[in-house]
Amino acid sequence: MSIAVYLVLLLALTLIDGYSLYANSTNSRLLTVLNTSVSTLDVVLHIDVVEGNRTPRTTTEVKPLTLKDIIRAEINGDWERGRFVLQLASQSHTLELKQAIYEALWQELQQMGQIYDPVKVLDFYDQLTQQSQVPSALLVQVYDEFIGRSAHLLAAPFHTDSRSARFPKVAALLERLTLSTLDYLSDILEALFSPVLALESALSVVQRLGNFSGSVTQLTLANLQLLQRTELKLNVDGKAAVQDNLRQLLEQPSFDQEVDRSLREKVYEQLPPDEKILFTAQKICLHNMTNHNSYIYECPQTYLICTNERDPKKASYYVQRGNGGANNTLRFAFYSSYWRNRYILMEPSNHSTGNYVTKNIYSRDSIFWWQVVQLAGGGVALYDAATSSSMLCGGDPKHWDGEERHVYTRSSLEFENYRRECVWRVEDCSDVTK
Ligand SMILES: *[C@@H]1O[C@H](CO)[C@@H](O)[C@H](O)[C@H]1NC(C)=O
Ligand SMILES: *[C@@H]1O[C@H](CO)[C@@H](O)[C@H](O)[C@H]1NC(C)=O
Ligand SMILES: *[C@@H]1O[C@H](CO)[C@@H](O)[C@H](O)[C@H]1NC(C)=O
Ligand SMILES: *[C@@H]1O[C@H](CO)[C@@H](O)[C@H](O)[C@H]1NC(C)=O
Ligand SMILES: *[C@@H]1O[C@H](CO)[C@@H](O)[C@H](O)[C@H]1NC(C)=O
Ligand SMILES: *[C@@H]1O[C@H](CO)[C@@H](O)[C@H](O)[C@H]1NC(C)=O
Image 1: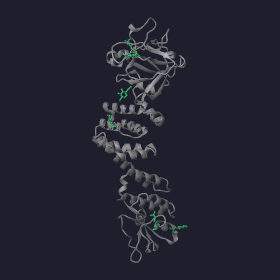
Image 2: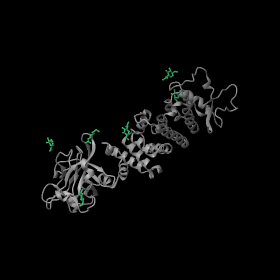
Image 3: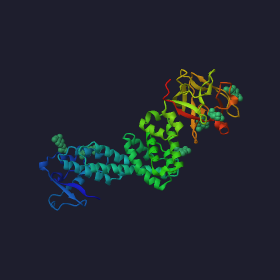
Image 4: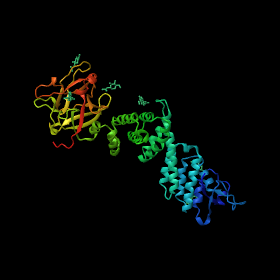
C-alpha cells in the first residue's frame, strides 16, 4: 500500500470505559471527537509509511486511538454507514481532519468484501462528490476502482458460452448506471473492451453484445464504442454484426424517444446510404438502381403509380416511420407533398406463391406501411409490412400501358429471380420545395 495518512487522536475522553466500540448516530465516538473544540483536542497529524505504526510519543497511560480505529468502529462492517461518516466529516473543524476522515473511510471500505460490488463503490463515489474539499486524488482513486470493478463484472458474459446464462449483477449495474451520466458507462466500456477483445474474437464480442440487456441508450453507446475499436476496423464480419445490432436497436419502439439525438445521428451514420437517408431525410425519392431517369410517382393518367421521368417535385415523398403490425416491426409510409398527402399504397393481393405480377399499387389518401430492407449490394427492397409476402417491382415494359409505365408487385419468394425489377435506390429529396 502507499503511504497511509491518518490521525492519531490522543483523547483521554474516548478511552473512558463504558464506551462500546460499536457506535451509531446516537452514540458516536467520531461525533464526540468532532464536537470537541480543536483547542482541547490534542490532534497530531501523523504521516506514516507503515500502516498501524504507532508514534513513540504515545506510551503508557494514554493509549492512542487512530482515526482508522474510530472509523472502523463507526462503520462496524456496515457499508451503508459510510454515508453517516461522510456527514460527520463535513462537521469537522479542520481541513486536515476532514480529509483524513475521507481517506481513512476509503481505506476501511476497501477492507470490506463489499467493494467487489461496483454499485456500492459508485454510491460511495456519488456521496463523496457531494462533500466539500474532497482531495481530487482520492476522488480519482475511488472512480478508478468503480470503473475497474464494473469492467471486471461486465466481462463475464463475454467469456460465457451459454447464451441463456443470466447475469443479475450485470443487469443491476446497468440499471443503476441509467441514473448516472453516460460518461461512466463509456469509461467502463473503454476498460472492458481491451481485455475482452484480447481473449475473444471480435465477432463473438459483437454477438455477445447483441444479447446484452440494457437500456436502448446504453446498448447504442456500447455498439458505437465497440465499432471504434481498432480490432473492428478491418473486420468485415464484425462490422456487419455491429450493424445488425444497431438495426435491432433501431427497431425498438422506444429508440426515437429514448436515445439522445446526437447518439441517434451517430447510429444513422453507420448505415448504408439508402437506409441512412430513410432515417435522416425529410423527403425521399425512389428511383431505379441503374436507370436514373426512372422515378416512382403517380401515373400521368390514372391513380396508379408509375415509373416516370425525373421530376423531383412530383417524385419527392415525406417519410413516416413507426412500429406496428403483428411483430411490432419498424415500418415506413411515403406520402406525397405534391399530390396532397396521398400515400403509395398496395391493395391486398394473393402473392403467397407463383411467378406473376399484380398491378395493385395506387396513389391513395389512406396510409400504407412498407417494410424496407437494405440490400448488401446497395439499394432497398420494399415489402408490404403486413405480410412481407409481396414486393414492389417495376421496369418491365410488358406490364406498361402506353404512357403509363406501371409499377407492380411480385411474390417476395420470386425476389432472386427478378432482382433487377425489385431493387430501388433511395435518394435524399429534402431540398425539393413543393
Ligand atoms: C445506537 O446505540 C444505542 C446505544 O448504544 C442503542 O440503544 C441503539 O439501539 C443503537 N441504534 C442502532 C440503530 O443501532
Ligand atoms: C455535539 O454538540 C451538539 C451541540 O454543539 C450537541 O447537541 C450534541 O449532543 C453533541 N453530540 C455529541 C455526541 O456529543
Ligand atoms: C442471443 O442472440 C442470438 C442471435 O445473435 C439469438 O438467436 C438468441 O436468441 C439470443 N439469446 C438471448 C438469450 O437473447
Ligand atoms: C386470395 O385467394 C384466396 C383463395 O385462393 C381467396 O379466397 C381470396 O379472396 C384471395 N384474396 C384476394 C385479395 O385476392
Ligand atoms: C412475425 O414473427 C413470427 C414469429 O417470429 C414470424 O413467423 C412471422 O413471419 C413474422 N411476421 C412478419 C410479418 O414478419
Ligand atoms: C430498372 O431499369 C431496368 C432497365 O430499364 C429494368 O430492367 C428494371 O426492371 C428496372 N427496375 C425497377 C425496379 O424499376
